[in-house]
Length: 226
Image (cartoon, rainbow, N blue to C red):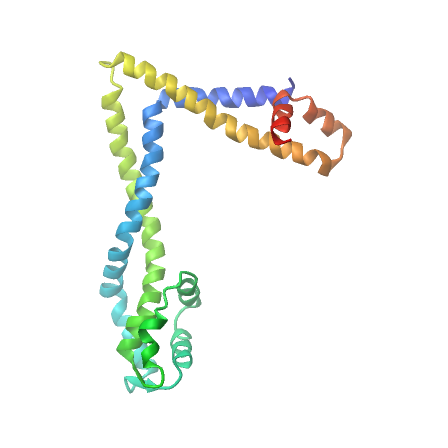
């Protein structure tokens, strides 16, 4: 055992103590909070994005389209028309919309060779593209909001379940919390050991090699990796 092992033991012990004080139930609830927040953010992102687009962006988009197409319609190749429209919008709108595949080409394919109206272009191309950009922002915002709210609620639930009235539950919660903390601490410590083992041949330094080989944990991880 060398300095690496001592540091890892201290690190794992600290994580275990923190997790014991937090408790197993709250630790699991916090993990669940992020998962639930992600699901809720995904569910509500679409209606919220559509609301924001309809009430705050739609008029601006239509004004821009009418500026580009003063006649209200245009005849020609769809790609040429759409490229012209998106040249007037920020580049990230098109890039992000294209990345998430929001362009409904099937819905507008029947318009090829016929007159393309401003309303048709907005509905099938520009609208979904702008909504996709808004949706990314909305998902992040809602995820943070739901995560904070859920953690507050779960903290209150944890307090009720682990109050002084429930001594057995409280002790079990702390013990399982400490066990979970050990696992949470061992994982990053093991990853560091793996990196150190990988770095040995890359660095090719005798002193560094002896330093890593002198670690019990590094040797243990090395055996697992073999």
